[in-house]
Amino acid sequence: MSDSPSVGAFAIVPNNDLQAAIPFWERLGLVRTGVDHQYIIMTGWGCEVHLIQAGHGPWRVPAENNPFGVYLRTPDVDAIAARVDDLIIRPGGILRHREWGLYEFAVAGPDGLLVRIGWPSSLIGQK
Image 1 (tube, rainbow, N blue to C red):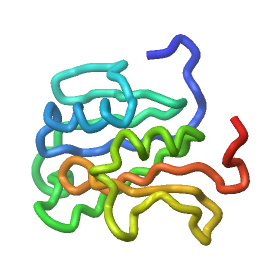
Image 2: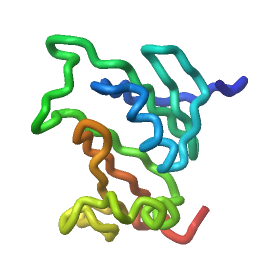
Image 3: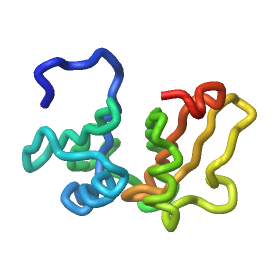
């Protein structure tokens, strides 16, 4: 973990198979910065995603219609979309400017998790 923590809100994402979820997040460009057998912190582009081994009851991820989602905001949208083009949800999740002012795309993550990655349309081209 960084010596200078950032202020923000970070998702805690339950996974039915925690170890199997790691390669997905690494493919998006995040790296493991905190590791435990039941809890893993992935960081990249100023974001953190906390992965936890799902248990039973409300923390178990349903086999269908996963209710969980994560939004990652980064100016590196184009590069990440190119890296995971085969995972993009089609047709609705393709990379484009949305009417709500974000340039984004969506992929299906582990256990059917909805992952949207984007950046404000008005800031595209500015880093």
